[in-house]
Image 1 (cartoon, rainbow, N blue to C red):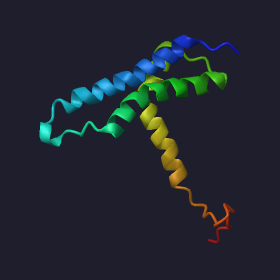
Image 2 (image 1 turned 90 degrees about the vertical axis):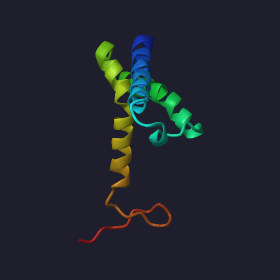
Image 3 (image 1 turned 45 degrees about the horizontal axis):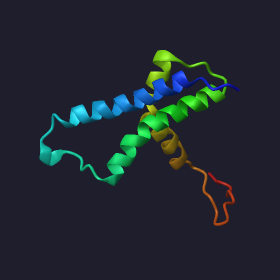
Image 4 (image 1 turned 120 degrees about the horizontal axis):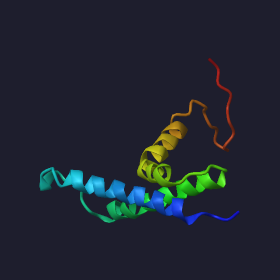
Length: 107
């Protein structure tokens, strides 16, 4: 499978634009209320463009043809997509036993 680079770059740009929008919004609030620019902040600052490209890669490798605006918005919305996946996993109603055995649920 030949991987098209353009949609990956477009998705990465979407993730970068998300960072720029967040910085712009933060510039409107008082300095005392702004988020500290520590190591974790910078980790996510660089992660979102990479995460956007990775999500686009997953779509492409699954057979979807994404490009242009769709690739860009994929990168732009990657935090929401990842948070939704995490929330679904954390909200599981299935109890797990000690040795990763799934226990039966009695209602």
